[in-house]
Image 1 (cartoon, rainbow, N blue to C red):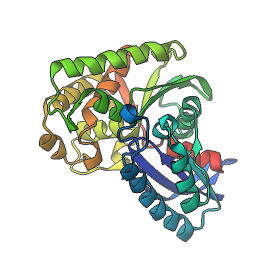
Image 2: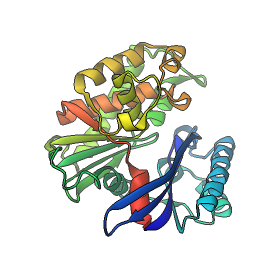
Image 3: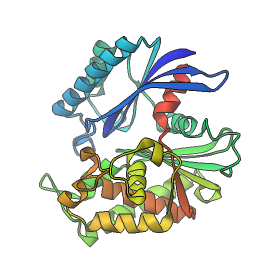
Length: 313
């Protein structure tokens, strides 16, 4: 067993996983998993730069994670950075700050590499099982981008497109620095149009309707699952491998779009950092299910973070 630390720094959140991993036998023992909403991608779609306050929030989380990694004695660290740091003009500031705090450079992976890691994290435990049909369509709805991967025992096709929940919110639901609450029909239509165009682009590479099982990853999907399950608090074990029907996703999306900030914040399993962006994320998930013909989504708590851990080992 190799003790590894995996860090996934996305547009909205930064997450840490410390685990003992043995790739030869498939053994995986989780020691610590945590997440902080840092909104690294704040304003990147508009300005093309990482905001100083967003960088400081992220570096503060890195300091916390460095202490955990040292305490648990991880032998290897892999830090993967995604959409926001790919897009920013001043990404060198981000890279240097992470290097000083954690002693490793963040790997600013391509969208296709991100998709591969997400697929590995979501499906390592599914490969060889009989309860879900192959091939899988793994969909990872992030803050800045969404990754699509079709595969069975290995990846067959992958594509990343820029329709994350933060990007769609900032592009279409913000006016004078404030989220329009609830969004007007024309703003919702604009998101749907962007998502539809992005799905057209994804389908040039990934046959979305060819998969037998849709597997959904990341905070938008797990939060919708928590709502569908009626959880009084967030429960990873209950959410992991739960199934949410297309009808439930439609109903929850409509409810989120019609709600105010206060109403969404009052949902028991809602993380405060997702209150303003969950409706946009739900629209992405709904569009994916409608386009792919999936009657349900299988929700996975294991995602790119787990894929990073496997790769580090």
